[in-house]
Image (cartoon, rainbow, N blue to C red; front, side):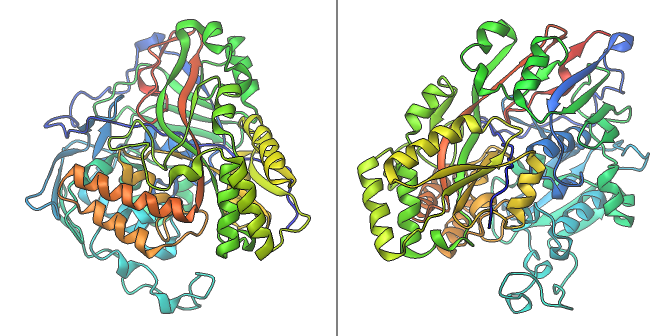
Length: 559
């Protein structure tokens, strides 16, 4: 397949070290949409075009995620440091960590005036889990009893994984969800999982109004939420306008007149607009400014650790990376990358070479994993492995391609990465770039990556857990498993970790799961990244939260 000049954007993630469910919260202290009174101005934020319709269970990329997290509210919410507070939920309780009873605060409404009920959550979760709906976040419902019945059975699938004509799952809804009343429902898991409540602030678990069931496609273009903002206007490839939701009943207070998320195709352009006073917030400083932005912006600069990792993912459908020869090539490419040099020269220390698949800001992280020497720069061993692969299966004359998007600053690291691969392995290496993020994602999802290529991947934590860096990306059939990787031993280890009785036991099992990934290399970890952003003099109270996104509700701006 001939590569086209295109590119892709990155997801960032951050961690939370203290995770405690609040005994109170939600249901009171709403902002009534008042913001900061008549003086509240519209805050402009550099962003991009969402890849998918704005359905909570479909949105797993950074641009759409920022919108969904601000126009919907879940059972719990994450504070700036990753702590957990009840939001729509009044209580989330279990005697055995397997059957969870969830009660809701009264008085919550969607922006169409209909109430937020237990059925709102159950409908959203069932829609997301049901395989024919093709939702990206379906994987997150795997622990719920009855999930397997709403998926296609193996004998209903073609060899390419698509369903055979006329085949449907055994059930349309999960048996583990039971509505008790308008303000109460039960969730039964397939095994005890103590951290289940931690996940419930993620988009997959947001509620949907009754009208969603009538026309999900139309809903995705004009979503009706229950969060601190409502989507007032979406001009594709230009702007998404968020305005305060007067019926929001949660714990956040909107201190501005609204948010305009502006779609930029170049991060340098966004940063220059910030310097010129034409943009209020940038969420990603371009690498061209890493050496100067803290001096230029002063106390308006943001440079803080975040639970974000950058990788190069390996498409399982590309034969050049399959079998024993393919594994040697994965290992050779990994060891031909000088992570230390790139993070210092390109990012001025705002990135840290990766030694695993998670993040140092997540509890349980360690740099002492068995097998992680494959992530260390070792040009002699890299060349040896490449030559061994050549004897088994010659590479040919095609370059090695790294596919990504060009509207985010990736050429700055892909170029030196390719230079190192050329020097060490003696092959050509090129940047296969796509103009904008959503085009890159579509090419990735449609398996259009060149036959001798890999593609960039980034992960922004959905909730603060080591497991969130592993299962959603590398679990068999997971919505963000864009490589098509599958290893039953790895899947079993994840399930064992999720059911662990203590966090310490879970951590050890997640480490064991990572040693499997280090052996298979379905993705090649590159570096952990800081949250690097900044804001103009026109706004105050700007902070970036546990997930590396700006906390939009608290930003103030005078008209």
